[in-house]
Length: 134
Image: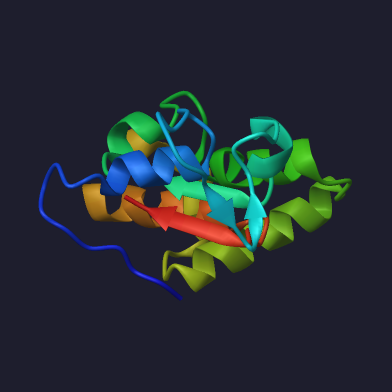
C-alpha cells in the first residue's frame, strides 16, 4: 500500500487522474505495475482501478438505492447472478461497517460519512488492483 501526501495544489489529484487516464500528462510517462499506461485505452484499464472522490454527495445518484449503487459495477463488469450480487452487496456493506438494511436506503437518508463508506464499498466491489482515495 502506498500513500501520496502533499499540500493542497501539489498534484495529488492530478496524479490520480493521470493514473485513471482521465487526463493526459503534458510530458513524461505514467507507469503502473511496470507498464507505461500512457498509450493504453482508458476504459479497459479502469476496470482494474477505482477512484473514490472527495465529495460523496455528487458521487451517488439520488434516484438509486444504496444497494443499486454498490451492485451496479458488479452488474456491468461481471456475469454474477442477481442473488450473488445481492449477497456481495451485503458483504461489502459489512466490510465498511454499515447495516445490511442500508441497501434499501437512498443517499439523501445517509450522513456524509455513511455516503463516503458507500463509495468505498462500491469502489472495492470489483477487487481493483489500484484504489485511489482522493
